[in-house]
Length: 361
Image 1 (cartoon, helix red, strand yellow):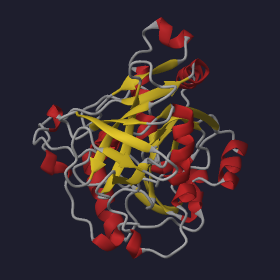
Image 2 (cartoon, rainbow, N blue to C red):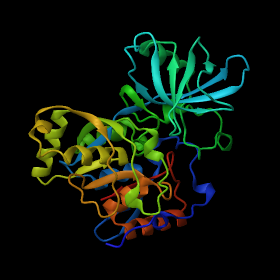
Image 3 (cartoon, helix red, strand yellow):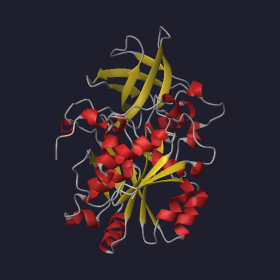
Image 4 (cartoon, rainbow, N blue to C red):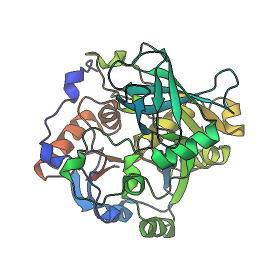
């Protein structure tokens, strides 16, 4: 296979096709159905997904919950505005009960070590260290439990930068709409929603189960690395950031049985696909089958990758030059994805997090 360059995954998207708000009824989104074997494309709505699911299929969904990771504060003394984006909670010197330390992105002027940031509800933070990788070590004056309660009250949902708040109608509650209906696991929390799951409604989930489709849940806490731009010309040199994954042994064994019975495993979103492929690359290790799995994974999937477990996937339309469009190209074939995206643009599908969906089968 010819080496793929970053420019091979570029495309032009008219700005008006970027979805800035969700559909009023989630399953009314459009659905582009792509047959990866022959490249055939069908235009449907998301509620039509039932037509393409079979009894015995397993839908694997990421139940991680988005938490309001954006904190708006002011510098002590000067009152200068600072934005702190919670990225990764750290355990430091047994301080977790009294203080909480996070790796954060910090935005503002003249940020340096030793600065004190003041937030609402008596939350304070000290800039401890510049990690020299775009992040800062930040120590808060509250233990983990109390701090997360405050974060839920004062934090903002970290919407992607292409969602322009000023370009949409009033009254959208992103804390509800930028969350899947089955989100439950928030031990660490995600900084972005696993957006392929945003299209499901309780009624549609019930219909899927009635059809005999099995639903299994995994957890991948979406980190900023998922959306980090690929900057190297030769994509094989790109390094993914690690993200925390959990999958219990019952789910692992149910998926293995499904594969043995020639039933399809369908990943809902790139996060589910990455989790499944990362975990099942290790199933030769008997311990994986006998124990719940939890670890940090950084699998990078791009064309040429041989899928071990995933047969099909539900996904949204992804940014150009992103690791996500590389992943769907690996599953569907790059030519098929190029064709599907051209058609989606011509037919004015809505793109990105709040946009329409694709089923690669």
